[in-house]
Length: 243
Picture 1 (tube, rainbow, N blue to C red):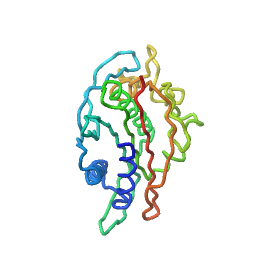
Picture 2 (cartoon, rainbow, N blue to C red):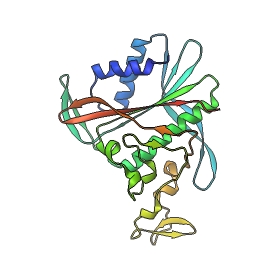
Picture 3 (tube, helix red, strand yellow):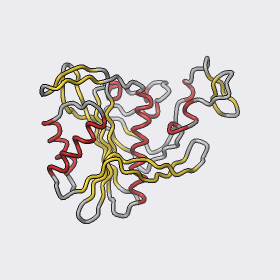
């Protein structure tokens, strides 16, 4: 199964240059893998338990789905996480109309890329029958690819994923030096809304996790398709089990 995913992406590129949604991408990729490798079992959205630690140091077990889990005849499994981040686009492909929404919020998008890597690492650490996993990101949003926020004092500077960058295993978190001081105030070492007993959105929920990784991950974006002056690129990250 060493090159099964690369082969599947090549076939997917030939058949589908664009997708309506992340679910559309997920289903299409699942069908392609099954078509090329009928001996493999494919599960979509399989929930697993993930060990998480928040910025306060609190540990918890979070029930979360893995987008695709591949199993071979020997019981070996490969977890796959997908991301499909788009900017607004109306176009046609093979006679079908597409109207993509503008997802925006690229700061949260960058954080979510790291979180997907963390989740795959956690999956591999618990599964004796898994040696590697895959992150596949497809986007027509240049802001992810060309914008090196790591060189700027942006709120998400530590989560940059631009071309030829490296996602470092050390977790530096959100860059609170760029927080909006007209809206937030720091009390008891926590940023809160001014005149409200409400924490900043990075102090609760799934944006508050401390995502320490086991390895560094180089980021390489490659061409996927070009439609109506909008270029789609993809990033493929292979994550190997670390003892």
